[in-house]
Figure 1 (cartoon, each protein chain N blue to C red):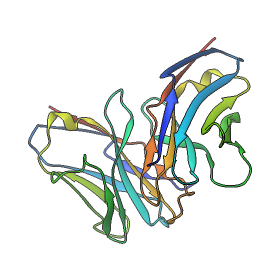
Figure 2 (spheres, helix red, strand yellow):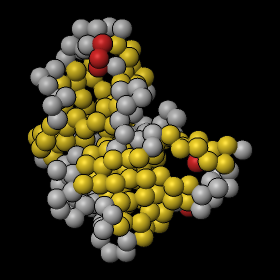
Figure 3 (tube, rainbow over the protein chains, first blue to last red):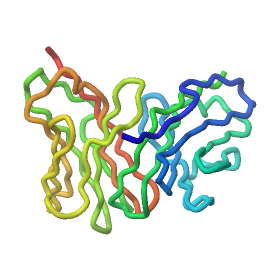
Length: 115
Length: 112
């Protein structure tokens, strides 16, 4: 069964550095998402992306964050200048079409540790 | 606005016992509801979903959930718990074409 893949599985970065988290969504999916889960807390929506532009973003997704689909397969989340509080699991997800009844398929996540 | 509330951050059952994980939703429109499971150090795996039609939906690993509009609930059940069911379970509601809104999660522990 097709799956969403994320790399790296664990990223350790110094505070203030830029980090790029990578995702390869399921190939025929059109809608892409990033979520964050701080240790011990709930999964929080960051941003959704469709047709090469952001369709919705949460208050967490400030100017330090950006997303990009640089080619036909990758979907990236960039944090420009990381802060300690950015330490979390970051999940990428994708879904096949616009219907609200379509589930989102999640990757295994990237654990981001900011030192 | 759509949201979900999961009652009980931690549920502990004995192996072979009934599993009941509670989820209540609030939604101004007919909701699309989902249950996801997260095993340690893994991502979120879809267990089941409710969209339209039959209110009792069956998912993977023997889980099922019933959509009860009158109670605004979508509780997850499994007749007989297995040790491998130990995980974090998240109820979620799909908000339009965009994000999923997740509950806080319920950690299920299964005792031998």
